[in-house]
Image (cartoon, rainbow, N blue to C red; front, side):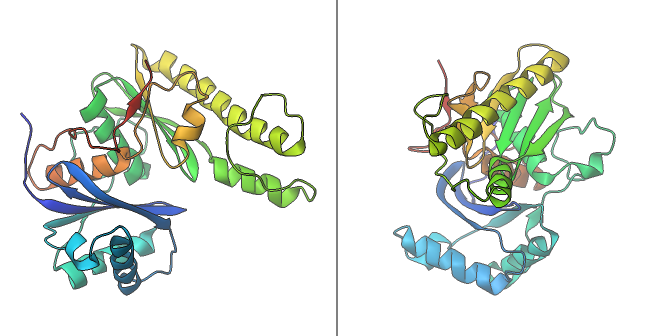
Length: 284
């Protein structure tokens, strides 16, 4: 049975590099914004930034953010968790629901130290279970590349963490004086004929190969035939070159936050209905 709350909520995913904010009306993601994570940013600054972004999206800022009935936050930056809680109280008159490893979301954490599992990985697992079933593997290409393994009984059983594409490439450019910074796009061929194409090939095909290698090992240990879902800012680029990715779902984490909000408030939650221009893309 699906749960229809008929509410408008604000979902906030605070990552180490970027913060992604989504506005849901019922199960529909109607607005989403991405901006740099700044650990010192205050509740007042978040309020001003969100208002400006909403206006830039074509709505009056106050209207786009009006009528919110709830706020839900996942954060890997503790000072910003507090800032978003303060934003909810001061500007919306709402107490933000904060997802932690202790939140009762119906996803067992069958790992050695459950308290170490990041909130973003938990909500990714929750959304993947609701949308795609189990077993399932989630590959999140963010500051780090995380691989989340969800077993056939719906339990999060661990995974892998690797340096993210942006982190690795920044280290490459910082430590090689003669290599230029390049745009992260698909190169024309694996064999680069110039320095730029050499770097693009190494980054794009190299990370695609890494994903395939790790996913195949996890899938063998997980058993069954797990669906593999990619999300995160660079998912579209790399997943197009990886052989193991079945689906690219760019807003999986926000979707997980929406479901988590309803679970934390006594509802069942549910997988989102298709959204124009925002659907997951699945390989044939």
